[in-house]
Image (cartoon, rainbow, N blue to C red):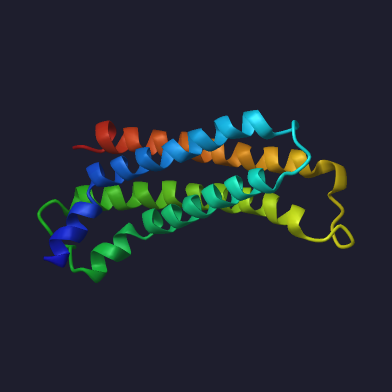
Length: 157
């Protein structure tokens, strides 16, 4: 029963669906940033938004990157469609690494603001660091859309 559930969750359709669902808060976060960035003094909400989305990006990146390992753990390898599954594993690994990197860079931008100014002075650049974090979120969203489309239309053979 668990193997069937895992097989469904790591199918190209499920992964594409999950990626599209995750793009939604990324787009909403971007829209929210256009309303608050450079218009308010308090950046806590903006920082929380970018940090939260970055954590989601990192988590998804790790799961995508380890699709092959998940298949091995649940003994879903060596099937009749193994060549196609390996292509999916490779694609998920590559896009997962990209998602992980963009999520980590978005988190780095926010964490630099949180470090006291006596260590890293970010005084007048806080807005720019939040904006930089959002750029990485937007890049991650484009990456997810591209991967979802590839899963649905390119990697179907």
